[in-house]
Length: 78
Image (cartoon, rainbow, N blue to C red; front, side, top):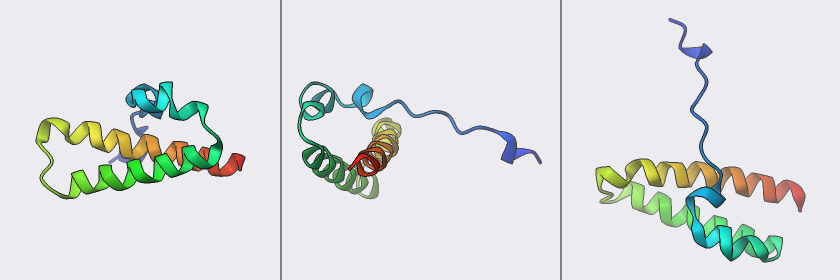
């Protein structure tokens, strides 16, 4: 009855989920970060739509959410 009052669980930021982004990509110019996030979204969505093992399902969903949030933030800066 009161489902609308529940908060969605917070997704960790992309730098906590993706070590490559944390250590390397985050030091690149904004355009490169945007391109990386777009490729990460594409590949994660592909994995989710195809034969993704159940144990990895949550990880890929979190990656999609984190990459979308990071992409939105980067586009607002640019």
